[in-house]
Length: 423
Image (cartoon, rainbow, N blue to C red; front, side, top):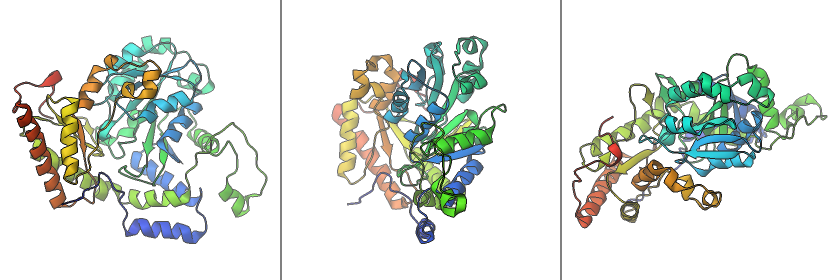
């Protein structure tokens, strides 16, 4: 029986050599490799500056604290996301305002518009599976005169921006595009994850990329974020170790969330081969899945690309028409019994105990539940072999159709929630 993991990290000789080079340099914490990775991220994303940190969550907390979030403030975000999106808001003392999603799994701009109040300071739009949100619609909302009039700036950064901050939760979407350009140019700030299962990994890590209006001094903002990410200390260990003197000052009540060089080395080796190799392999696998399933009556095609957007192909979100959550779970179990590890992205926030206890209700986000209940995330990563892809495809078809046969609802004649059958 084949054993196919869900998302192992891509480790080749380039990665090993870069890590060994770091170990032999005798410098493993924040230093030159982190700086090189930040420069590579600005090239890939076409953004103004990049600040590497130790996780997506840290990057989100850093961003929200930079913008001055406090108790009583609100941040709008989708129900269909990983818990870190909302927890970062809670950790800053603010309130997550959870709204529903569109059928493409991204945040619904109309729901965002309805949720805006004078307490709204930011929107975190989540690029689920690697597909960029409708940033054009979100920008139109936050730049509209009536919404700008509602905005209540209370810090220097908020006064300077003069409107709601638009943050991209780009944990899934490194390499995604809008109008042929990096999707990171669509928001004020994009926050990437380099967790072990992501398209590009540093084992654990994240990156905050800035795309701020011209009246921000990007060098100053970059310096602030770097200092804040190291306990607010104005001189890092690498600088002191290389003749910068021992004396330092602590300027802010910062966080200790810096990325070490030993982690950056992994990402540095991967990012150099990302666009022309790793990204393209993921794209090929996604289209192989889509081509294999597209003529099945039960299949809801994910948007891999449309007239404006192209996914990063981080997740292949297979969705099945007219199955219940329990039926979906049965299909998953049988697929895993055959040696294929699959996943679900994501359990909507109001279904999780912490958010239930805070009063969030799943019935307020019905589409998020509908999408979750019929979704199965399939393995998609560069190391997948052709015979493994074929085995996954054949197993999925067999087990989905077995479920329909068992329930005597083969070939359902209607689509739920007006799903589109074509890209």
